[in-house]
Length: 254
Image 1 (tube, rainbow, N blue to C red):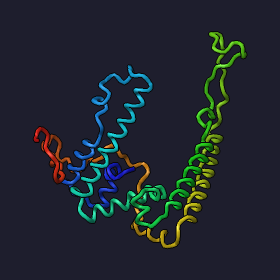
Image 2: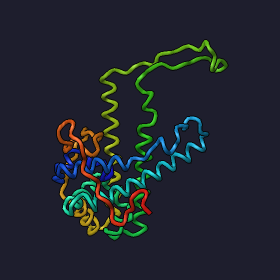
Image 3: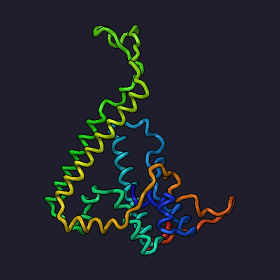
Image 4: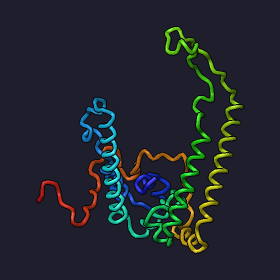
């Protein structure tokens, strides 16, 4: 999750001591950062060819990334004070974990060499492949209907439906427990490998950048984004205006 997603969490706003006025501005900022899907595709997405869809989706991702970066710049530079911005950056780093090591800004702050960054990326890619292999084929492992028939009758209307044997609740729980154990082993192996790439000094700097540990509740909702706190009484109108970035031009003004 990025800064905008994290500050949409109630526990994060509480940690930052975000005021009601700031909450209203953050809500407006989050909404403005969302790309206009309908405007981009013109309502005819289903009629586009596969190639055109991919182009449009690539354009959507690019637009989304640009808006998100602009919104985060406003969040850090105009809405939050210095202490709040610093703490939010620490929380973002904690959530990213070792993935942050491949980002230019973090790599520069820690003094990572190009060779170190490449090695970290390769380690993470290898870990991802192991995780994917671990969960491959999991979707059809718990039973359900499937069509079967003679090899010569594939696709025939008379193909019979056969029932896959459904596993018991205990078997399913045991399987998921086994997957969790293996997944945690892969993550531990990856953490150890990446730690081996960093020097003692770089590890110390990275921990300092992440700041005091912050526990983020897994099941906390991020739907509200800007949060519902600070909306005021029901029916209240008028929201705090989003600060204008220095040098920004108003629409319709040359």
